[in-house]
Every structure is written in structure tokens, then in C-alpha cells.
Length: 420
Image (cartoon, rainbow, N blue to C red; front, side):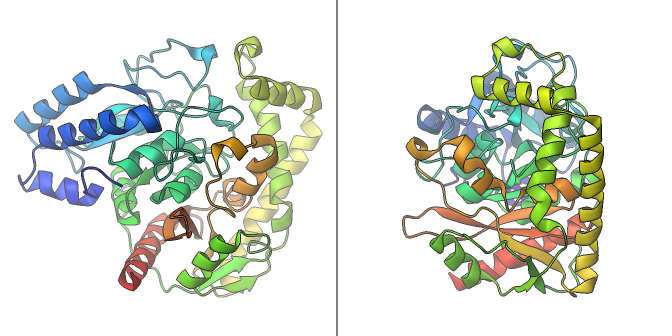
């Protein structure tokens, strides 16, 4: 699916060795965007002229860092200086930040070039319907809310996509479009510059062609290199394999062997997550004019405002801390190196069948627990359905062990590639 046919690491290496010019790479990526955008709509804003100028300048300049000349896309929730950042919402129409978000500034300092802004659901809630369509089958759901990023990386109209993940918003589109999506340990990467703000559940993360590419971004952003894990003994939380689509289950079981383990309070993750998300969203959107937002978003925020209590939020935060401790202890108690499951319980459904109120819980139930606990989690491809739809495998690790999760994912990718 990827137009340029290069992984992020391969492109960076070719640029560093002088085997590829930044202008040539950018022309390929933008050409792929022009070819695919009329159908797939990954971008809300494509900054072609400035991106090409930056690529030509990169070829003339001294090398700035490991991402010198690499084209990336940024989710419309994340501030980019001088480019639109509208949070997928009419409430922020025309907003052009004066400064980059922390993560964008860090990537630019390493030489990356921002190609444009990727479509998102309004405020990342997943309750409206952006025009983005799946990279494999444009009649199907692309994932949310970093959907534009997942589709763009899969199609080759960017080599990496920077996004946010509050309940699986990076890992879901990665899984449904057949690429890698990584959510770091909570707080490891600054969320400064996310519009209009974040809750305790939100993380900055990224979508890349492979887990190895994700490891390169981790190194650039945090200085952490991908060290090999102690092993690949995998535990699956009890209940995570219940109610799976048969083809998702078949792909997952063919890819890995797991032991099912019990983690106290894990079954309550969705309820706890819901209380925190609703209560803290009220604060984040205190100044948002609700008459300008999508009806589903407005109904969610109005309901959250009427039901929010300090006592309820405090109890949910205590429950979150207990669950975080239970997940952390599970690695030692059950002697597993990673927690593993499918990323999403079902493949991409036709857009005509996608009802957010009815189906979001099915798409989020395996990803949102790690937003609640803050553990690093990665999605990598692990097969396809009979219709050719990608299936993702989720790997989660101990708090702070982001590099090991990415190295484990890379090992799994290599193992699965060897079976093809």
C-alpha cells in the first residue's frame, strides 16, 4: 500500500548516505497524496508548497538530525506553527497557532518536515464522521480518531503520523490499516500544545510503517533506544479473548501463543475510564461553544456536565490507581514479559454500518485499559481476514519500558514476516 515503498528507517538511512534526496522523497510522498486524497481523505490540510521548499532547503543544508528531510503528518489536534490546527471542529475554524506543540518542535529540530495536518474526529471523541476512509477498502471504517494518520502512513502519503490516544485512537487506526501504532507510557512525551487540552487519559503517540520505525521516533523524542526484552512470554488478560470476531481470533492465535492471566479490576476498566473521560472533558471544554460542535459531541459534553461530581471523579481516580498497580504486578506475579491481545475485537466494518454509539465500545475495549493505567502499548499487524482486511496485535509492557515494547514488537514483526 505504501507509495514510496520505504520504511521510515530505510528512508532516513538513504538520506543520510546521500542515496536519496529529500526533494525526491517529498515529491514521491506528495505525489502519493495527490493520487489517494480524492478517495481516502487523510489530510484536512496538505502544505505542498512549503513542504517542497523545506525539502529543497534540507538538501542544501547541513544535516540537522536523524529525521533530516523525513516527511511527517500531524493530527489536527496538535499545534503546528503557521498551519491550521482546528481540532476537527467548527469551534476552532481558522485557528493558526503561533508556536508548535512540544512534540512537533522536537521533530522539526531532528530535521523532520511537516507535510500537513491529518483529519481527526472532533476533539478526538469519535462521535462525528470525518471524510477519511480505510487505506485497504475505502468503503470501510478507518479507525479513530487518529484515522487520517493511520490511512496516510498505510498509503505512503507520509512516513510517520503524530497523533493522540485517549482510548486507542492511535492503535485502532494502525490495526485497521495494517501499520504500527504506539502509545508511550503516560507522561513520557509532553502533551503541551494539544488543542484545546488533555485529560489524564490522553497520550501523544505515533503511527509508522513498522515497530522499528516507531523505535526511531522514541529515540528522537526521549533518547531511549530499543533494548531487547528479557523474553517473549505473553500473557493475555482474562476476558480479552471473549467475543472476538472469528477471523480476528484466528489471526491472533496463529500469530502468538499466550497464557490467559487474571488481573483484578480489569473488567471495570471501561467504566472507570468513562467516568474520568467525561468528568475531565468538562474542564477541558469549559470554554468550548457547544452550539458550534457536532450533535453527538454536544450531547456527550452536556451529559458530562450534568452528571459530573467531584466525589465520583475522585473515586474513579482511586480505582484507576489500583488497576495500574494490579497491571504492574501482573508481569511479576504471572512471570510474563508482555501483555498481549488483538488490538481491536473486529475488523473494519463498512462505513454504512458504523454507528459510534453502538460500536465504539467494541472497537475500544481492548485498547482503553492501557490509557487508564498509562502502560506503553503497541499495535502491529498480525494477519488479514479472507477479505484482505488487516488484523492488529497489541503488545503492552511495564511502565517506562517503552523501548522494550517496541523491540518486542519488532521481533514479532520479523517472526511473522518469516512465516509469509
